[in-house]
Length: 146
Image (tube, rainbow, N blue to C red; front, side, top):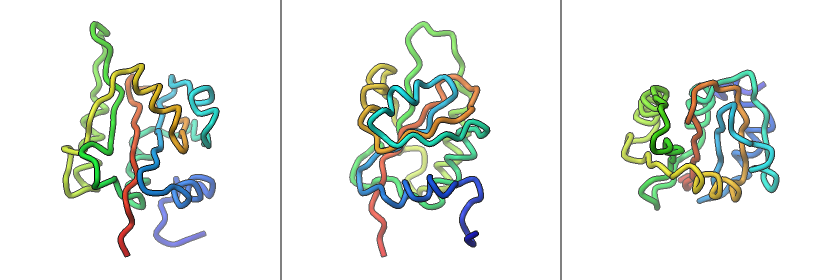
């Protein structure tokens, strides 16, 4: 056990977060996301019993968002005409506001199929049990300043 590390972060996930370098991306995927096929060239971490919010909150305690890009945090944009509400995005904004001094200005949206394509080059994909629709997140790692 370690002190100060959120308990939800498994040894595998901690290792991945540590291995990632500046500008590498990680996807926190909802339960409908095709994590295994999209992440076939990435490290896929199964966290099926957990939701995206609790994982995001824990990761952002250790993981700096990239300061060299305007939007290091991306959401999967809702398809035009899809009758889906995304109240979970409000919780994401709260988490980011607490974790990054730039606040929700770091959040962007990527069209659904472009999100899938970009996710194929992610360093890792976390497969969660999140039931909310369009709850997928892509984070770009920043520099850890000593």
